[in-house]
Image (cartoon, helix red, strand yellow):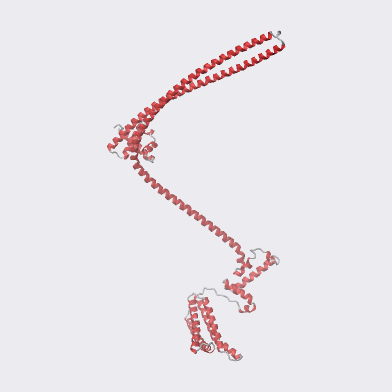
Length: 516
């Protein structure tokens, strides 16, 4: 503000304060007398206190209203109690000037004159509040009020417009008028489109009329379906994006957890391998000593058991061979009996043929009946001979079958005897191998004792153990698999087994022998 503007504002404030003082003085006198004489306050002092209370209350609320507007924190509802109290003051001032009898024209003028100063004071306060508000908040949009003439010409429609402006924050009266005009024009267009029957319009086409009470323009209402669909699509995309983000975070967390678990497991396995590598060697040597002795005793026991079993099987095979020979001799005897029976049947057949010839020669002598009886008897004899011959043939076939079966049993016995001899040979070989292993175990034991006396370290013991395994494999290191070394020494790493084998080769090249 310039200097002139500041002086002008100071003068306005001074005159406003003077007006406030005049109004308070006049209101105080009139209200106090009226309260004492008409409102039954009992004494003039109580009437004065009532007047002071009303005026001080009005001034306090006006001061608070102006202060909060100056601080850019206006309290909108505080103006209404001020207006109410001021209206009460105006009524009390006007009543104090009312005549006791009938009213005249000057009486109305006098009553109105008593309320002029309070109304003027309120108008000055509202003007000051609005001025302060515009100074401290110049960016606030100015509201364009509805013309008073419209209130007079169309009070109901104007009231609806005023309500919509206040409810939905439309500060411009021309803007509100433009919205109504657009809505009316759109409604007329729908009537023309559907020939006066708007009910045939779709839900989307009726949106402007339905949404107008809620502050929507025609364009905003028509654009609402598209905007809602777009918003729904955006919400769907946002939900899908959040879901994918959550899945990605879950997968990343799971992968990190898996990687951490694998790293921890790898560390544990490394430590376990080191511990196994250090402690497994001593355990392997002790285990090798015990298992060597146990294995030697087991091999000896198995060798003895195998020898006894082989001998029993040989005796059983011999008994079965003799039994087969007896069955074969019996089958041959049956075969000879069958042949004799066959020869007897042949002779009987020849005798019958001779009888038939004789009967034919005596046919001329015998009567016809006797001849026929003899012929029938001869035929019966012939059939009996054929039946006996078939039985003899069957017995011969049975004897042949028994003979073949006996031959097969004999061959089977021979095979069993050969198997028994093979088992006996295998038992002998196994006994020899057991003795060899026992000797190797003895050598191993002496080597272990020598290592104990020499107080060798676990690694030196393991190298010597591998050297003895190489000698047992023929003296060639390549013929000893690393897997055997891992099994014997209880190591998990093939690299460690390879190192043991290489050191064992060097040890053998240096002249190491288990007997030394």
